[in-house]
Length: 139
Ligand code: HEM
Image 1 (tube, rainbow, N blue to C red):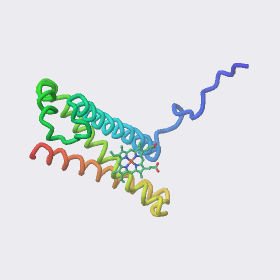
Image 2: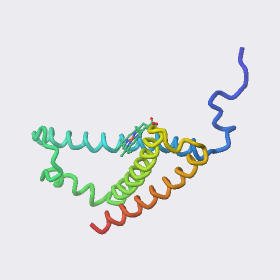
Image 3: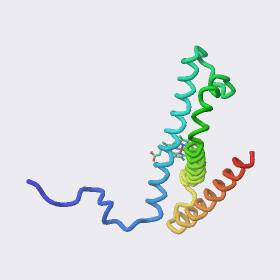
């Protein structure tokens, strides 16, 4: 029997909520950070093995820069976008992660406090991101 009803979890009929939106972005930022970390590590492993320098993960590795330089020269806009986006994801994930850890301690679990801590978390995440991006460009 085919019933033409929407499937659970009915995302399209829900009014967007602060709680669910922050939760979804916590997962998305966690997955994004995981992808960035594993891609960075696997690139380093690849270069280490490729030049028979197995186990050398040092970013001061000469050949790493020699072959990566042309790429960074032509695609610097892409690399800078990934770095800035990673900083945003990390600052958001860390700020919201601290909020999660406070909940795990049994703190701020009332609905009003969940909303207030969400606004504070967003403010901290934006400030941290801006400060980190300024620091990145000044260094
Ligand atoms: C590169 C660093 C990080 C990566 C790759 C990462 C990745 C992840 C992923 C994939 C999840 C699962 C998300 C889900 O399934 O909903 C997660 C959850 C979590 N992360 Fe991170 N994370 C990182 C850094 C941090 C930092 C710095 C904090 C600091 C507080 C943090 C706190 C948490 C917490 C508390 C959870 C559990 C949230 C829950 O109970 O649902 N993470 N992380």
